[in-house]
Figure 1 (spheres, rainbow, N blue to C red):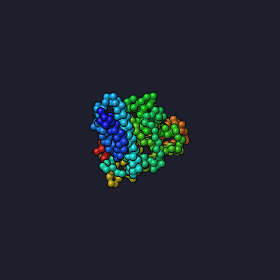
Figure 2: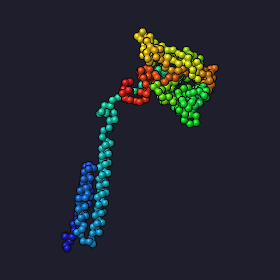
Figure 3: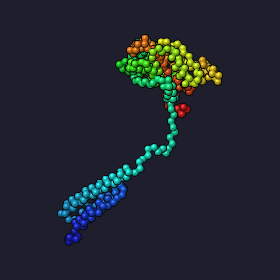
Figure 4: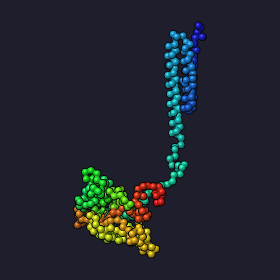
Length: 354
Ligand code: DAH
């Protein structure tokens, strides 16, 4: 067999052709897909290098091992060239991306999303907070898991008061419970700050109650003011101002004596019914005010001397008032919502009305 007919030479020539031509072909590919297509033409099942491998069977057995090694070496070389070309392509793409005009995050979406609605509780809370802020009260915040000392004891609840019962509160561990009212904030503020002070404290509270007008979780707002020579007249003035700003000028306010362990005297506050108000300002009576012309909106009173003493404040020098209201109640009365559950279901058909 003459040298020119020896398949070994043909294979050698084919291999060095590939070694020379393939890397520039890889480098010329403009996209990753083009590069992969090019790669398949060489290293794929029907590729050029694969075709050369098939010629191996025709080479003299003695030379096959050497050719095999050459083919493998070239294969590795070409794979390296492929990887290099791929890395170069990606780098180029990334650079193009980085130097392109920046993505405009402020462009409006293509699908208009219908705007949401504020929850009636949020609307009412923001209004109440705004009214008290206008009157000079600042916001004070506190935890929802509270120690019984701040939720009950320092507020003058006797140890056997029904509110402290297992049936009425959610107890956790070590004398802690989910606070049953926001009055704990009075204690926290008075124990950490020196008077004078005027705060409002919106928050979530919890009780073992569940019916058409009670929910185990609900919202309250507490407001309290401590200064020298504060009287019931100051409390009444703030209540009248609050009623006017929330429910309109001339809204009548009345205080009915009531018992809360942390105030003396204590009162429940009614305002003129918002639903049966006549053009002349009188109330005709309706089902929402149980035909009384008045709606109860909150509890209040003069801070009890015992509470001051518990917080290290001298009741001879300082006096103050406190009041607390349920936001669900305020919202139900404001909008004529018949069932408290509606405010916790978050049905969009309900929320869309506000
Ligand atoms: N904490 C009372 C409750 O949840 C509401 C209340 C009544 C708060 C009288 C007060 C107050 O600050 O003076 O029923």
